[in-house]
Length: 131
Image (cartoon, rainbow, N blue to C red; front, side, top):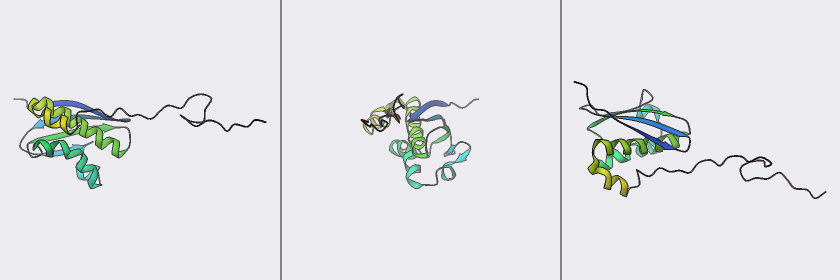
């Protein structure tokens, strides 16, 4: 019998995280085929990833496999948190008010502004000289 998998996607800036949540006896978080402790060496990033699991008290019940691409390490950690939160909703709809209250379901849509033509950057202009 095949075990049930819950798939979700999380995004933040340029980072995209594809999350597979598998209810099983062995609890582990694997990111790009590496354990979370190896992938994120900083403790604050590991805490960001685990926030929705600690809030809903499901850390010891679920195996989580993540593929994440793009962005920096902070953006990737927040994309994973968003993806895990969305997968938890598929796993148990009753967790929605708790996740919503802590704003884990809200997609942070802030992106880098594009460079415009005739300018040096997104907002910066070329130096102006009257003569």
